[in-house]
Length: 287
Ligand code: GLU
Image (cartoon, rainbow, N blue to C red; front, side, top):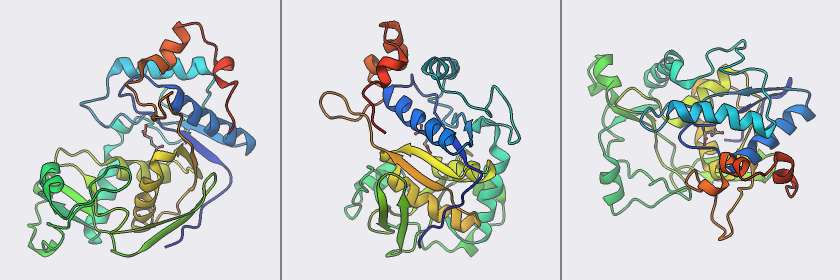
């Protein structure tokens, strides 16, 4: 498939997850998102991606708003400012995800999977995608959808995966990295869309929200290029026009490793406390 992006009027988003303090890498991606929205005289929204209840903490949400504002980021729609697509906290949007899940289920795009992460990792035939996700060996793929009882409560309490078409090429032109091509079944496999505890996967939630919030361009880190390929398949399955994509090169530490929330010294908070200014932090950036 080749994606045809939807365009104007431009709507971009920044979508942090409050699972730790934001670091310089997040700030750089969000800064580019803001610049692109401004260049297009568009709207920038903030979506709080707080789905992972075990890892998201209220103090990180508060810190996230404070650090982003300190850095100079401004959004016109979000959990604090409201907007036409409320709510902007993913934890309050479960009805949207549930509707998409039902749609995928009735159209036969997804199937329940009882394999644990360990089962998949132990499978001799399971190579890993470049982003570290094991490529699902297909153990539960052929379980007949017909065999499943029509008890939606029971169904929703299982893990569900999206079935990819092995060999299908997913192509898109990235705003920064140019033409991209990934092959389903080789570069990534059947991927999770729903967790047995009722939480949608990152892939499903982000697609549902980007479509519902009218996002025309997604600006995000390079580490999510493969996720974009998976998400394009979800956009198509759900009948959405996909946004355009602009992936940003990752900020790396002095050892060449990508920044993670554990790089406390490079958290915006620590940098601010050490007396750095946002202007000084941005001084060496090229976008
Ligand atoms: N919440 C995701 C993250 O922090 C956002 C990814 C995206 O831009 O889709 O990694």
